[in-house]
Amino acid sequence: MVDRESPELKPLFERMESEGIHMLEIPTPFAVGPVNCYLIEDDPLTIFDPGPNSGEAIEALVVGLRARGHELADLERIVVTHQHIDHQGLVQVVQHASGAEVVCLDVCKPWIESFNEESSATDRWASGMLVQHGVGEEVAVALRAVAKAFRGWGCESPVDRTLTEGDFLEFRDRKLEVFHRPGHSSSDTVFWNAETSTLLAADHLIKHISSNPLLERPASEGEPRPQELVLYIESLKKTREMPATVTLSGHGEPIVDHAALIDERFASTEKRVEKLYKMLEDGGAQTAHELARGTWGNIAVTQAFLTLSEVLGNLDILENAGRVVPTETDGVIKYSVTA
Ligand SMILES: [Zn+2]
View 1: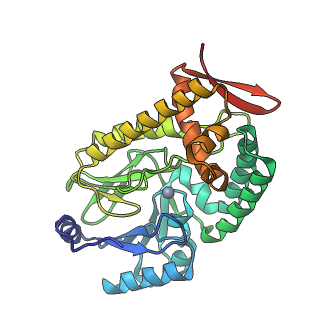
View 2: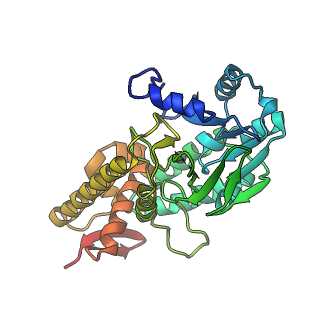
């Protein structure tokens, strides 16, 4: 839980209160810890990201709303910042209890309306992709079962309105400009209040952890996989230029100096990219999974998708720069430094 009384954070939370923004910490069963749901006390009464689909989460949401004098039924709008289940899982329950309008970015809509279908297609694609990059078949099968078990924390719900880049989310007392900032996920959306210089960034930028750019399947079969880390860096560059004085995250504390944090992220990416290059230079041709094992040991097996996302993101940067080249033999891809 965030220490709202700390000397650093107290003025930030006071400022948010004065803007009618309330951060509700909703528990999740995931390693990331609680997710931040934002209640905006304005007209319409709105929440961003209700949390994962669990009894604990709905209880925390109800308690958080009551502390502000509201019931679930009072909610008039639910906004979803991106497709991940720790953010979208309670949409259906909250929508049923309130009749609230459900709003998200156009590319996020299928992940809410057809969540099971999207997840199944992604899991099928991920299995093949893992094997292609050197993960054993049996590990890929086990991970698919784990991914399926996780789906219970997500939900499906009709979406009433979709947003696109440049739209405004209107309230009585404010309007938030909508920007698409893909990378952490393909549907990452940030909301900008130009009047107060407040940025609601969700998982696009998190203070205590770097937002993993997770691999996603291509929009249609046969197309190349989107380069999520490359997209993420492009998105971060745009966000860095915004004159935000406070940035509200999907997890953890509000951020004061987003530009400095983004610079830290750029520096650590560069470091990891060079480290991988050195591993290929010293060790010769390797699969992405071998590189992941060389970096994280056994974690690369239990967290094969996460670590492969990280390694392939870095390899994309090296490949785009012409410094490494992939070679496919018998359906398995190895990377080597270019001669
Ligand atoms: Zn996320």
